[in-house]
View 1 (cartoon, helix red, strand yellow):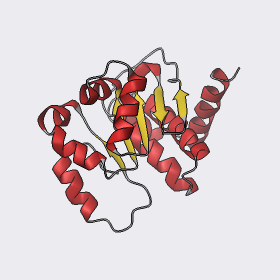
View 2: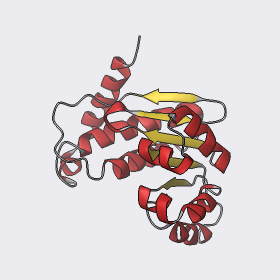
View 3: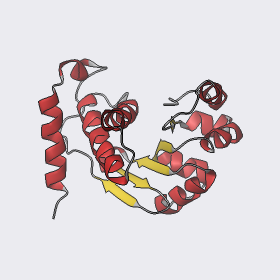
Length: 181
């Protein structure tokens, strides 16, 4: 996982890895503004690129997120995941589209770290099943959403420290229920 650091450092990290099974990359508006050419070089080398809706629009100059995702796929990654905060997330590949709703919350105490928690939940689930199929990636996105929803309910890592597997599975089932028709 190439976390949100300078794209040149992301490339340095990637060069140290031999034969990765999956490379996921995150970024932020600063790197898009200040290091876009370097970021685009990094994106060419990753399998999954995770960014938020504002970043997708900024990197492409395209206000429509579907068009922006297609443009980002042309930069090189196999999958683009666009996070939309309280509106969930969207995943795009050349052959698939998946939309995951956000978990409905009445109280949000601190959104800091929600994106990192999303990425960790995504990577953690995929590592636990050792499977990169479309079905596994979709489940990983739902688990990522669940983990981020817990993160925003308290400050820093406080909610994560007391979180149980049963709570995670319960919320996963709830998201499945609210999106079924």
